[in-house]
Length: 151
Ligand SMILES: CC(C)(COP(=O)(O)OP(=O)(O)OC[C@H]1O[C@@H](n2cnc3c(N)ncnc32)[C@H](O)[C@@H]1OP(=O)(O)O)[C@@H](O)C(=O)NCCC(=O)NCCS
Image (cartoon, rainbow, N blue to C red):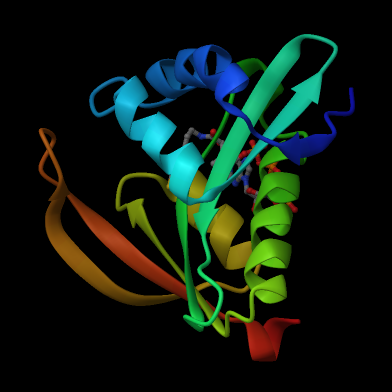
């Protein structure tokens, strides 16, 4: 099943929050935090016949040179079908369009699937933040993609 990616809007927030809470059971963002992210970043949703099945957001201010992947998740039933990769590609295209040279992200050290997604797109590990994710006390792996080299 295909799931085309489009820009996310506030009208998508209920569906997005359902995926957020299911995907991050111990440290889901609040709806206010997600609304703020949709307001300040570029948000995307993937929509299939089942409705919204994934979302992502990137912060890529024009002129900054750097961009940050803020969040990405796909509903469990639709993982492994290329939707996460498509959402990531939209974020990287946006970052590139805004003139970013580098894209950063943090990922939980205990999330090898997401790390693999990022590594497959050329992100490299550049640091580690101890106990960054609370309340679980899990380290963050910091990853970076140099767009000039990758694109
Ligand atoms: C991480 C996540 C967004 C990936 O989305 P997805 O739609 O399942 O990913 P895709 O099908 O597009 O796969 C893209 C790449 O991710 C990696 N990947 C995906 N599923 C994987 C799995 N089960 N095991 C290992 N690697 C996997 C692979 O590198 C894959 O590329 P390939 O198909 O060429 O091998 C999804 O698993 C998810 O929502 N997880 C829960 C939320 C989360 O962890 N978000 C990231 C926070 S940093």
